[in-house]
Image (cartoon, rainbow, N blue to C red; front, side):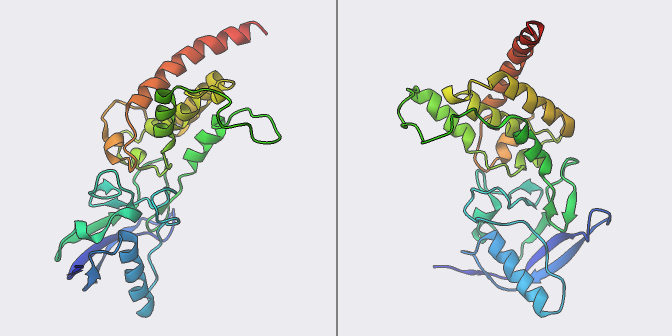
Length: 258
């Protein structure tokens, strides 16, 4: 049976725009179902604010099914909140207790400038994917799904990497503001498969070097894996570094032969 949480205090970051300094504002919610999602709770608060003639809180949301990655919030200092392997949209209020004070902030990273309130610009993640997140495929009808045999361990590893939803929690959680887990996932899910071999060496070099333009360096704190709503393994970072070293040698040889 559902219960209602009462006397919740929400300390929420408010910021009018990128040039504004920003500040915390406190709000009270007197009754919210413990079955409500975190985003539903924010929607209830916004309805209350609009009813009082105040400006609603801006925050990102879309699918609300844990697959789009837009629900990027720092909740009590943790990316996506206190529940491991869970996106903000799938976090429910039963994880909190009546009388709690909940601090809600946007993702904090130099590469993610705040646009307004709880919304940040995560375009640098798109720049990484644009640098090499594609494969060469012949046009025309789709080939038979089983035309290329792929060992199950390889397929499983590629699918594990492909679970990355690009939310940026790994960057927000990293003390260095690194995007290595995101980049490694995007590199690995293509580099592990036969279909991704045509661009394998150019892909990893281009994506890693684009990453380095925007983000900090990885020093293996492991905070990224802990914050990832899909629990993507640090092992993919090691695979990416291995391919990057090999790419530097292979690509240099190719250039010398031109």
